[in-house]
Image 1 (tube, rainbow, N blue to C red):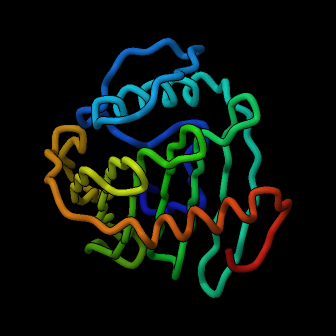
Image 2: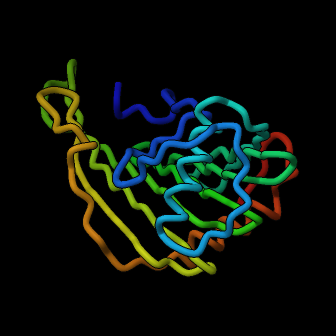
Image 3: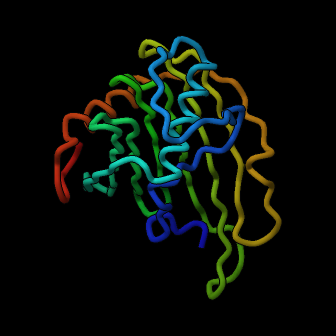
Length: 201
């Protein structure tokens, strides 16, 4: 059931980002030494890192946390001992889930992808309820710890009926504040060596 985010967590080795202007061919085994100084550089590094993740060539470790009504899991992916991607997934109040992916090079976040889902009942019967997921995707391109481009798309997915292909929905450029996300990222890094379950980040 598409709304059942907690029970059907995606494979953490797979990133959920769609191809929105991020499709660049790369060698999955390559290690890029170039500095990231433009949005185009961000796209190339993202493509390289996505290939490494898809081919499961990064080491990973994880820990879980529970804070008030928020239950989450953090997965850290490393290349040659250095953190290259951090994924923070949590569910809250049964009807909301969030997945944030931080893409990293030389200890600096250069791209953030965030996917938030709010689901509600949308008709049907008590025996066969229908649901609707309202999804917001955010893509944040970052240089020198500041967002230089932010894209957002929103769409709904219903459990019954035809749904539009999210890949064909255009993103719109927005202004964004990444301070809260970066504060969360720093908390994750401080707790990166945790094992098992902890309280609040």
